[in-house]
Length: 74
Image 1 (tube, one colour):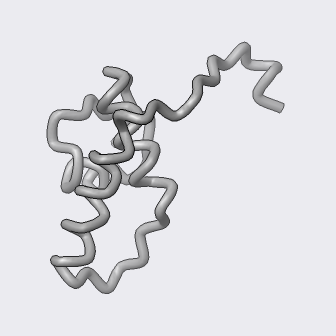
Image 2 (tube, one colour):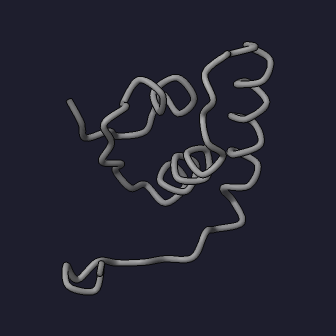
């Protein structure tokens, strides 16, 4: 379905692995009861490493773990 919108898909860069692990580690150390899916960490890290923006309905979740990430949302 995304082909209709002429979306750009790119591979997950290796450089985002360390940032993903760091964000997940911070999440677990905080003992958060909210269940944040692992893909959100990959998406945030990929966007941060590739200097991309993230369109999201939950900007606070991303902002907590990727403070320099440009977010588009409410």
